[in-house]
Structure formats: C-alpha cells, structure tokens
Image 1 (cartoon, one colour):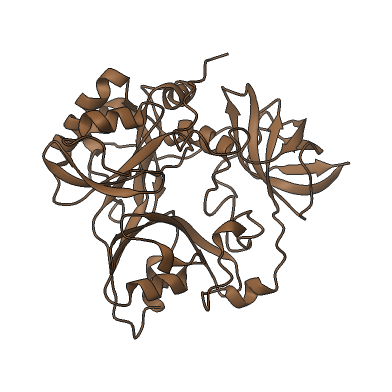
Image 2 (cartoon, rainbow, N blue to C red):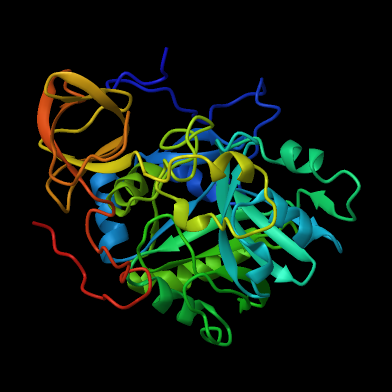
Length: 393
C-alpha cells in the first residue's frame, strides 16, 4: 500500500522524549529550523523538511522564483580517497569520470549489472585522488564497498551535510557572504573553497531547481551556528528564507529534474529515463555497460500538463487504455495548472498527445504530454543567462 493516497501522508515531527529514532540523523541547522514548524521526510536516514508551518508551499515556491530560498537537504556525501579512487568511480558510474577536473562537479549515475538504475547524485572532485559523492536516497555505500575489493581506495562517511541556496538572488548573497567575494571562474557545476565569516567552506554551483543557485557543505569541524548566522545576515537584505521540499518539488518537476526511486528505479535504464546523455558508452568498462549495449535508446519519461494535480501512481490513459503512470505531480503557481512527470509503458509518445490522468481529487482529467523541461528549454536560468524574475499571475 503506498504511503500517500493523495489526501493524507505520513511525515516526521519533533516531539519531546527519547525513543526509537536511533538510526536517524539531524542536520546541523535542525534547532534553527525548529521554530519554523518543520515536518520531515526520512531521506538517507537523515531528516529533510518537506514543509514548514511558517511558510505555505506556494509562498515557498515564489520565494524560490523571485528571491532566494534555502533547503537543508538529506543528500548523503560519501568520500572516496586514494590512488584507485578515480578508477573505482569510473567503474561505478556511467559517466567518464576521468574527464572530471579538480574543482569541477559531475552528475553521476550508477547502474546495476542488468542496466537498471541504482542511484544518482553529484560528484565533486576535490583533489586528484579525493572525491565527494552527494548521493540521492539509495543503498550506494555498500554497493561501492563491495566493488572496491582489491583496490587502494578508502570509502568513508565524512560527516558532511548539504544545503542549497537557490533563486535569482543566490549569487548576490554569495557575493555578500564570501569574505573575498565570488570565487574565480565559478561557472555552472564548478566547486570552490570560500571563506564565509572566517570559516573555509566547500561550495558548488549546483542545485535541484534549475534556478540560479549554489550549495554549501557543512563539515563536522564547522561552527554551524556561526556559519548560519553569517549567511542569514548576508541573505536578509535579499529576502532569503528557509523553505521546504514541497515548494522545491514544484520547480524540479517544471525543470524535469528526476527523483531517484520514483521517477526512475531499478526497473528503468538511463535511456528509458531520458538520461542517455550521461552514459558514455565509449568507456572500456562500467557496471551495466554490457546490458545497456543491447537495450533500447528511447526514453519513456515525459512531462505532463493538466487542469488538476496529478496523483502520484495514478494511471495515464490513451483512448481508454492504460499507457503509463504518474511518477511526480504538483500544482504550478507559475503555469497555473497541474504539472507532472510520467513514465509511459512504451516510448514514442510525442508532445501534445492527449491523455487522461488520475488526479488528487479522485477524478480523471484530460491533459497532454509535454517535453521536459516545461519551460527554459535551454537551461539559461541556472547558468545566469536569463535573469527575468517571473511575476505572479
């Protein structure tokens, strides 16, 4: 039975007392976030705020689109260090990791032997033989350990927590917060070390929104309270606030950013998920390559537009017959309609195809398939090349 029926869902709240939460981790800003009334999901055994009592979901969306929003995520960085770190990662990921330079990031997809997707995330190359992999929710640590046998590489939990600063004012906030100003050549998917209030912090030009933005990585040796106070002071003139994942989720659907475990899983290949651009078949070897060599190249994932909110898991019908299912759904305040991501049973469905969609009101509504992303097709916003701030309609 799914955990959500479109009417209710189960989230984690902080309550007094001790009890059965031994395996869960709180991010370093948990106490600062608490007065906002957060309700959490469990992600990589870490708590991540889905929503805040202090900020309605649509207000959080507009905060992201018009100013700047901060999410303290549940992403789980692993550290790979040693002479064979690059070799192992190049075998684990479909991307050619040998081409990732020091000071750059890459989108890393890992497959099972049969070509099914295991997890995705952002790989950061800190040094020649030292990487962080900020993974999405999934069982990657044991998988990596199992495939490291006989190699000179250490895989550890560096006790790092990832936070995202996203929105049109994000780089202005970084300029104000960085003791020495913006780092040089801080282009899309770059990483850098900057001094924030006297503390050296790793940052990257990445995010889960396709808005202008960056992420910062809080390590165990940081004074997290002092770091947040410094960032908050820098962000206050720009209207920066914390927000929840529900608000970010709308934007990532519009942008066609996928969620591991729902939009794709072990039953889908990178090609079926529309992620073939991140598969370098010219590599001599990576886990899943043999299976992918003979697999279809067409994507089965596409976007969706309708006049109601699509229900996750609901059927997509064409001419009365089931043709796919909804994997993500929301109401877009910007587009003024329901938006979604759907996984079709077969590839080849074109943009504009009329479909019938199961929605959260318990009814079926007519809609149409739409190519992802739903707008900003060239990805200009996150690269800082499109700076128009959208207005509320």
